[in-house]
Image (cartoon, rainbow, N blue to C red; front, side, top):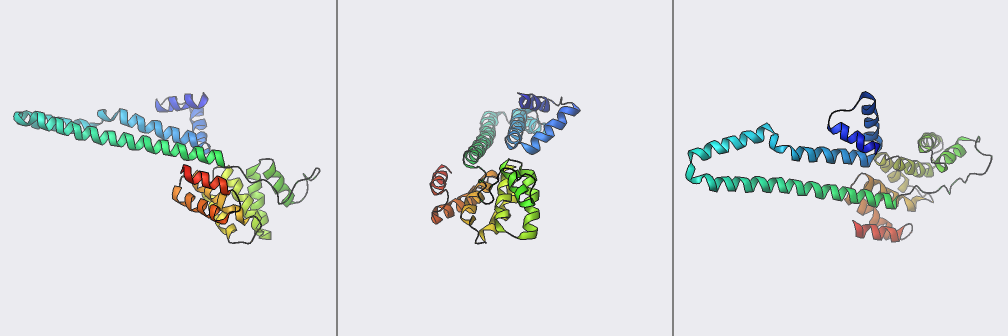
Amino acid sequence: MEKEMLLEKYLKGKLTIKEKQGFEILLKTDLMFRKEVEFQKDVKRVVTLEEDEAFRNVLYDFESEAQAKEQKKIFFSYKWLIVAASIILLFVLTYFFTVYQTSKIQELYSENFKPYRNVTHPITRGEEFADDKTKAFLAYTKGEYKESIELFTKLYTSGKEPYYLFYKANALIQLNRATEAIPLLQEHLRSSDVLSDKSNWYLAMSYLQIEDIEKAKRALNLVVKNKTYKTKQAKKLLDAL
């Protein structure tokens, strides 16, 4: 309800300073809210198209010419209106199809992505204040992904263990930072780490998050080809895409 109120006030230009701050935070952190804002802005532009000055000038010029050529008035009027209506209809249909496709992709992503569980360094009771590796995996296990990213970065810099890349990438995807996760997963795939067979699946999830369908399909096809991790889910997802 709060998001809807902020969006409505934004479209009317009535956001207070405090509300504007909250609105900007939502734009940066909530992908679906950002999509809805863009959608509403485009709808508003379509609805108000007839008020556009250039559009009125075209109509005025056409009507002036039609008055000078009375015999051709009806023919040209209907022809222009049909063309204009066709263009607008094509734009609206294309836009709504794009919005629908985007919504579908994000839905598929949400249904299929879940950060990989911590199987590399299981946490036991009383380890909360242990070394950085334990702290990193503890933060990851508790869902404190931002903290875990910082620790995994530090650990990989000093230890170069490939699995740090894998878990860091998962944390980045969870925080809607897939573009940062992609190169990490690609690097992880070049290693012989025991988790490497899972990287193609999470690479596909990254591409879905940023709506790069073709690259997501390529990653999913590799999952199916390798027949190791998430093979059945990959087949179903390919059919849905």
